[in-house]
Image (cartoon, rainbow, N blue to C red; front, top):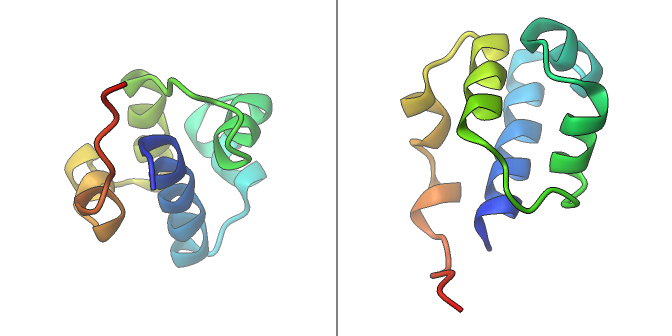
Length: 80
């Protein structure tokens, strides 16, 4: 799993946990639907920390809570 896949998986997981759709997350976070769709559909390769922070605000969680999961503990090294 790479970082883009981990972020996408975590967003989907959090939407399920919070009982919201990706569309609702966009409304809550102020991140455009196209941006979130690109992330969850693995089309976004470089997801900015500002975007992640806005999504965290939409979920009402901290960045630490976002990253404190197995998704990010098992990342492959991405040095090419």
